[in-house]
Image 1 (spheres, helix red, strand yellow):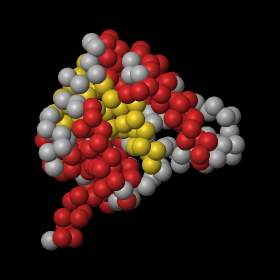
Image 2: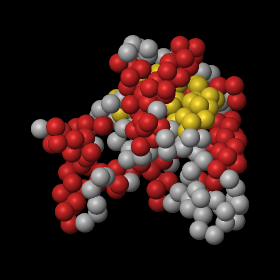
Image 3: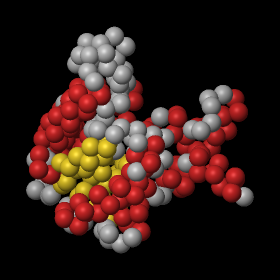
Length: 251
């Protein structure tokens, strides 16, 4: 079924559901990709301005999507400033609504709201509003990215002995309550790897700058298993530590 992939930043489309995209395109299924933030703040570059870095990441996203089989005219950039999405959810909803009504996807793949990154949470919230308002009436699934990092299970708590119960409780509750949809991607893992390699600023040091941070191999292993994992949109957020903190304050 045709899909609209919502990515907070350039590279999230590949990390979270690159294999699923490749499978769909290999079967001739239409896929549109929306990239919300410009990625300009992923690094403090000594040789590139934020605007120049945003342009580099835009090109990387187009190259990655091409590897997955998505043509340039099906990749939509909202060009919102990196790390500002949580203050722009109404704008996100408005702009995404126009794309949804034009593309008419049967399925939306959005980021998982359990990811600790605020841009991921904001785009997840916008996707949920599209569903709640009846703009999108088809399937709606969420893909995890930062879900695989300890910070998603601890934030806003600090790492320490007092956080240990939360670190144990969160993953255990997830294992017992979440019912993920698994998509087998074994046949397209190599294509997904080629797509991720296009995001050079995230997996390499293209400008040869000292201290340039990249995604660690141990973290990336989660995205190259035999399957990609999706949750019903909005389900995983119920396990978020910040959600439970807010509930206690309200009580």
